[in-house]
Image 1 (cartoon, helix red, strand yellow):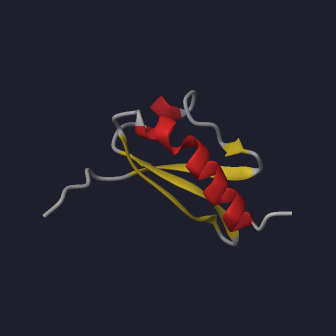
Image 2: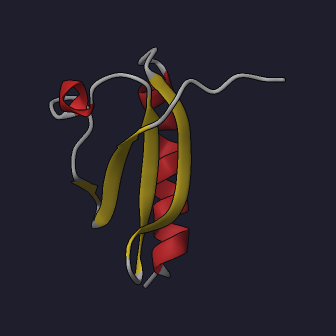
Length: 75
């Protein structure tokens, strides 16, 4: 059985191209989605509700959290 972080990295790798095709998605990472729970965190600049039909809450047992973030810019 895979460790939670390895499984999350695998799911991220398999789906990140699809998620990054949405213009409002600006970041994708693996981390704690809640206390002691490893998952995928997707940062978006638009309304989170717009992604409910596009990004599931869980894939292969890995929880996915969509968070609103400010526009990311290089300095």
